[in-house]
Figure 1 (cartoon, one colour):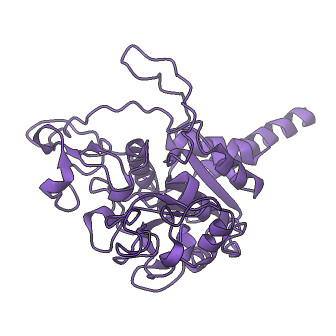
Figure 2 (tube, helix red, strand yellow):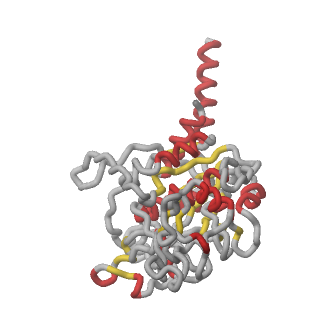
Figure 3 (cartoon, rainbow, N blue to C red):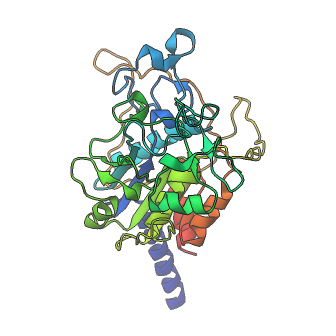
Length: 380
């Protein structure tokens, strides 16, 4: 009898620990990296989820619309393949953290001045008439790359850029995320909770920062590491675009394992979790391998994976919307997008670097499934 009692108590304790792990609390923080218009591909100008905003957070100029009747938002100057799905899944994470009392939310924002050092010009029109790019371009460095293709006179000189230059992996980009531009703004149909802390980066003309930890909190000048430490955050969930640049660099800084910056990890952090299913990868010099085909449901989309429900601390049950004289009208129909994995086989060397540094990686597409997946990993 005593042995059976001990076993029952142990099982109850394990169940309680699992519930505690799967709750989002004031010790959790979400870091959404650069889900901005210039990094997003063409996507519907419509709400990102059934409970997301039905009206844009700001006007979308006609010049930024495309499709019949302007029903889509144009892809940005550095649009990342798969980023439309990332925007949808980002909305899911915003909703989960917004409904969880006390959980912290950070959103990084590339915020470049005109003529920033990360923009490829390749010298001047007079000095490099055949290779000058007045509107920017993607320019790769390398020992065998002629100066007509990569002119480094205006490259960035921060730690991350210097390391990439030494490794022949430095890149300059088309103009993107210029301060105050449409491209620099967050997707207009993201329901960003009001308590979200915006961290702006890349605002110095001669310095760049892929990592969100190189930015400053808008309006306060506090660093992201300082804000995380002050909030006593122990668990950080990282997602956004692009995995192979800003997302990876941010995760490595959170782990204190970024050789380009040498930053220490925020002292309160115990776990850094990459939400792989809510990231996307830029195509590099070689094309990424294709994703493996997945079985299709008769609706045309893969079957939805089963997953546990997520207990949100302090979260009320969402009301059901029905039409009627005393009830709010039903929400408009959203355009269907299959919830498939995003660039599932690309950028895995970046994922391995995060895992090697002590980070966790979750791949479940739903918030509840991703949290449960982490908790399963953590108890091993």
